[in-house]
Length: 328
Ligand code: PYC
Image 1 (cartoon, rainbow, N blue to C red):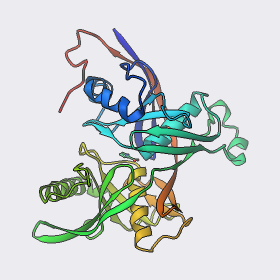
Image 2: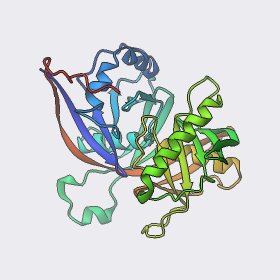
Image 3: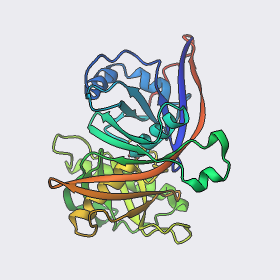
Image 4: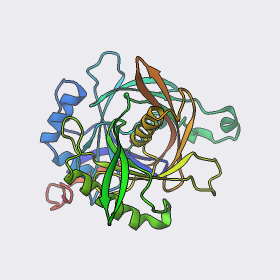
């Protein structure tokens, strides 16, 4: 029987499964090289993240040794269909989970990812929270992630769909995004099915048009923006629906997607350096974002909270016909 320890958290409703041990040896290389090795043993991803032990919504965070001597941590993110470059909600989940485990204390940590180094700051609990007597459970869980540089690749790309023309920007925020405002749909939780179907068809359409990243990577996340929900306690600047590569929608505002959005706003002159942008997810959770301009690059920082949910061991019996997960 194989036993793999896990700790599950959620960031703004989007789950992260932290795995710190029990994975195949990935060699001594950079995190990008370790990812290349992991891809050759893809059954680990499907075992721990696909049904029946995981689900389509969850993102896995594999804690690996960094090669960069300036980094304290390394991480590889994956989902139901493959691997992510970076993951904002997942980084917040990773850091809050390590905080819950008592492995880190408030401070700033450099984390090597396959697409570059990010810096995560675990904030101390505010005195008001400590004063409310939350006891031993009151682990610090608010995290800011200074992401890799973000940028807009293409502006106002026209896509014909359902007999009309919509437009979107293509931008990088640690993953690739197609960001669309003139979709004409209501960005609300009641409208999930329509949003999912539409975003999926938009992705299929621009992919058929040959729109990819400069190195041919599929633009595999779609963001549909609308005004923020008026019922929200904390006023946001915008609400978004984000469709992830495996057709699950992001319950969080999507850290890399918000980074891509910040890059577009900055390029349009609509966001100043240091100005706060509040992005609300389709379920109502909020990330705060801001940018710093460094040597001409746009560096986004995203702040949010994560909550631990469950911990234990995944058990994989050698006789289990679905021990390797259900592969799509
Ligand atoms: O928060 O960056 C993010 C993310 C990507 C996919 C799901 N969440």
